[in-house]
Length: 480
Image (cartoon, rainbow, N blue to C red; front, side, top):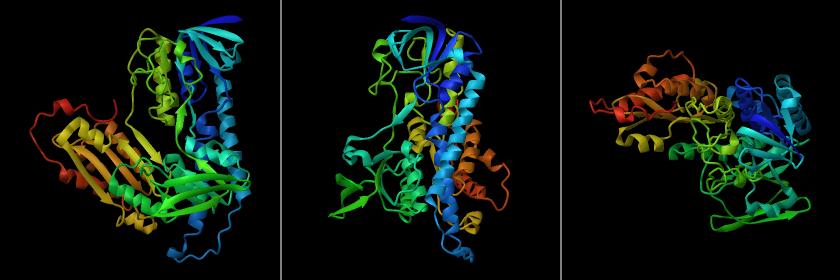
């Protein structure tokens, strides 16, 4: 068995790993990128892009069937399942192909190592028993995979995950979907709008990432108009059949059952750490088996090991993974000169209709850091002018700020075009703007953003002017 010596080994060629490797190469040519699976990021292959392709088709179908209110009669909308999925697969494959081509253009073949890496000892990696790599520094960027909870396993081969959806050649007639989280809500609503009979089951009452009770109730009401959704279902049994699966649950004191073609598990993702031999790495692990790390340097303890992307199970979003890869790769490359990197204002968007978004600190986080200095404001989208003209006047904006400093700290959003409103708010939070400063910004008429101005005015009115010394809380805002 041969052993190759390098300065840095990056394990995983997804978004975080590719960005990390690019940063490493700014400091040393002695580096390898190790990948056990298929090239192409989670985002391009089974995540962001194919899901948005499916959502785009669903939006087209929904808009075409929702014209009566405008006095436009278009006739019956027909969904061509094979055509829908053909476009999803073709465009998905294009995104993957471009990602792989970009990787090969930037990284020479000699630096690419195919195989599964496992720690044999600190700094020594075994590659599927065929080669060993001794690295002075290591970046772990092995990503995550879908998680199937045990109660769903009786569905057998009628059980699928979001990874398999995008390989369909046609749309199914019916689907039981477990998990009304971000992935579940996006896929469930899209498939329902494409004519699939969808019933969604959850545990614990959560609806996506929504924390505000009023917004959660509003969102639940809206989703239930399109498909049955029980966020805290009492499921009693799941039974597989030759042509489908039956779910039995208790509702209103009565036992009900329904048969579906498939059961889709959207019950989260789990970090790919269980086959890395981390027990031989010398690293301290948390209760999930993930190395303990510093989120500003991405360093694991005081070892020359860094972790980035979905594998650390902190913020599984592409832009966060890229930022973490940038920090981890730069620190691995310049080791032992480890520096804190930029962690941007938290920003998360769910591409349902209406859209869900979170920006900056949550209400609970503001209360934990600033105590009774929390100020809350908001606005309903029900009477917002532009939203009503579009027939999309459902939603709520909730904003969080701080008395005294009058700083904007965070938001929870539910409504039309919230992906754009969320970006404005994230920029403002990262610039540490006050609410009066935000209200000094231009707002065109008529636009959805005017609903944001209404919410900002409400928050500004709720803020107390005080001479209290709040220096200790000046650093509690999002973005560092």
